[in-house]
Image 1 (spheres, rainbow, N blue to C red):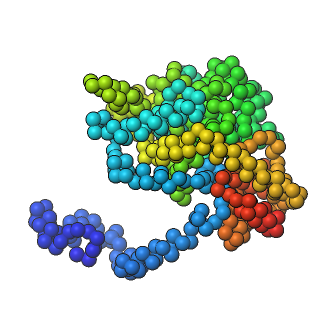
Image 2 (spheres, helix red, strand yellow):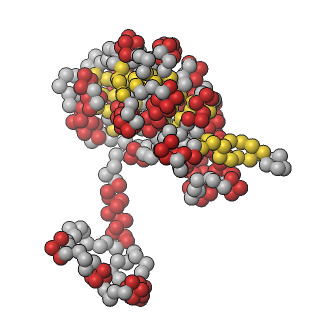
Image 3 (spheres, rainbow, N blue to C red):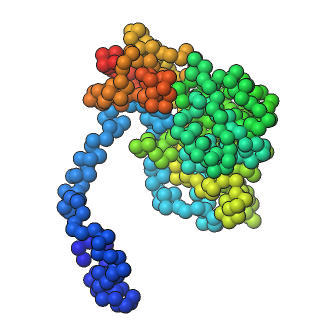
Length: 451
């Protein structure tokens, strides 16, 4: 065989051909006309030996702007946070990284306990009664929240703030199209937060949910407490998307009246990994527990009175009676939920608060440093966590600026003009606990010089 990685010998091939009653591989494809077959050889490189292949792949990998060699100020949903080394040690155990869906509790206690701990952490952070075993990511969690709200209220309109992540809004629209739901966007104030007057004017008897994100896509903190009476006054559910790392400092959305809280766990010990995969969380008030997508792991005791864990709730119609399903999601991101659980247990309550404070302090230092020279302006004056927008000098091309920053081993911010025409020439900058004063000063100096 010329295909050295296929473990089939010439004798294996001969026996398989004899079994199906033909004499050659060519005969197997005799029904395909010669004129539609590819003639010649594929335009690919020649085969490399093992050492040559490794050298080639390392060269390709070396072209990536990674967090080890570059100072990153890019956020917009994926962030450069500290990853305690214990996380990789735990998730690399074969019991976890080879585990399948834990249908048989008698052989899956470790996996089930890990998921139960994740659910418990999410409930504590969000202030909600129940959390599921995780979702694929924060964006799909938000879309599922819209679907849940529609099913619960028997209404077909979803009001979503334009300050919600653009990719999450796109997925929400895709999901809504299949469910025949109408998605209406709520406008922004000049301060980069949801316009409550616009929200009030668009609320109706057909509104199933009001969906906001805090901190929102621009990094600004929304007044969830002010949105709550508007949503509930119209009979709609309040859905809040929240960065879980902020919940060590900010009031839990559940305490502010949210019915559904969703978000992405990437800030909780999950590597950026070129943009994914990540892990979404989904938490609800107890009244909506049975409408949640996915599954819930519960704690019980066995016949001997010992603590044990089982799949307590999962909507079987998501597996079987699909025409009655409220969601097509019946799985979860168990390994990445484990990352988040290990991170939270390692950091503890005080550690989460300390990391949150570092993000706030460093981001505000960076914002003040960038605005000090007067060349760069902060368009929004409200409160923010670790992300904020900067208005660059007129005529600045953000993409070209970021290319120049890369040459200085700096990963620049996100070009807001890609998603908001009114914010062309604006850069969204993230500053996490990973950034040093020297990183921030070098970035500010480079922006002032290059912009």
